[in-house]
Image (cartoon, rainbow, N blue to C red; front, side, top):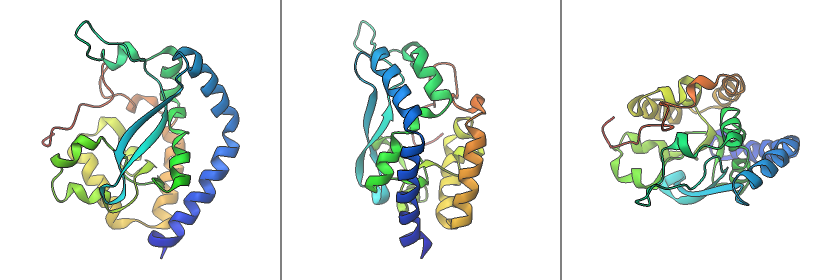
Length: 201
């Protein structure tokens, strides 16, 4: 009952309240990123949702679009703006995803939505992470975030799918609040947020 009905209702109510409560921070971040990113405060990207259905995730844009002489994007650490660094460390960049929650694309809690091109790389077991709506935060995020290997992340994701409950979601939300102030797990290396998934690691 919770998984199929009440979770969605609670998501909608809390997302709406979250947007209202966090609106001052939203406005400050929006304004700062608007100027630091030359009028582009938001970042939109296609991600797979529940059952693999594609949607566009909304985040604050923390990096520039700078490229090298060959037209390839520079490493993350070279494109991360000063404002973007603060926005990312404090997880403020995740606030716009509350709009995705209102739309029904995402849940407050669930496996993080990854890149679309990873879909063919998942094993049948790993692909089970798409049996529920992806979340702004999740079991893997409060148990290591980007310090985990992909294998560990997917194990946590599938464990969440099998153990989803109201009390587990509440536990994850509370742990997320504390994790926001622990920034050492945000970046896996100095150059990139997370080593790309290749179907093995």
